[in-house]
Length: 182
Image (cartoon, rainbow, N blue to C red):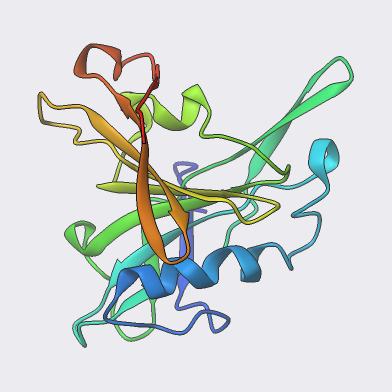
């Protein structure tokens, strides 16, 4: 954690093999993160966040998954948050902000969608957001932050991305998703 409270993460994470194909790195994330303490403990679980980044060797790497965050009790329900890191520290040389492609995070429940908080335009720091649940359903949000075009939500199925929803430009501030027909 930085002095101003911002979270940084160490990279690379040895549990994830680097690749020139970022999807190969993404496919390794959920199985590795769900092995971490309380990662699948549902209401009493722990969210984990990290970053995907490109190094000068042309390969994508995953940072370690950070547990920094908080839990909020809502009666019998609990809502977990993790603080998305803003920086990777890699002993081989820290990547610049333009070399960080995506943030990733885990929801410790099965069947958990991207939440409105996950989709809010004010919460998008990088060009892609990857979210997976305890059952390893993997979603990708491409927010197109600075463009007047819809954000796109994809689900990973059999090593292929399938468009499952959009966030219209007028809905980016609220994170409202519009489903798409297959």
